Length: 100
Figure: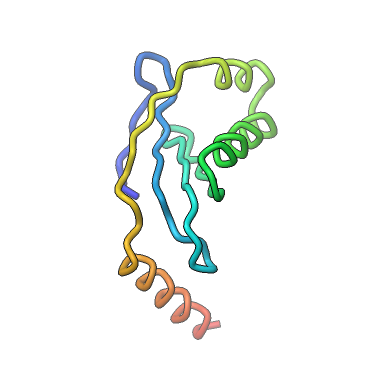
């Protein structure tokens, strides 16, 4: 994912969307609310958005959650994770595990 921070656009939250691999090699959707530093992963966009809303409900005030849920959201579509990126992540995890 691109490493830059964006603040809400016109008061609307900006969500980064990226097609990613999970730890089993299956594809899924990574959804990040950058200005809040929150990222969720699910096997569909709808599930990822639901997980993000649930996280927001559990960790923010009820008013903040209602406001987040009701606002128009801006989406920034990121390029999908490549097989090479996945391989690099897998290799770095193997290296990390070997240091334990």
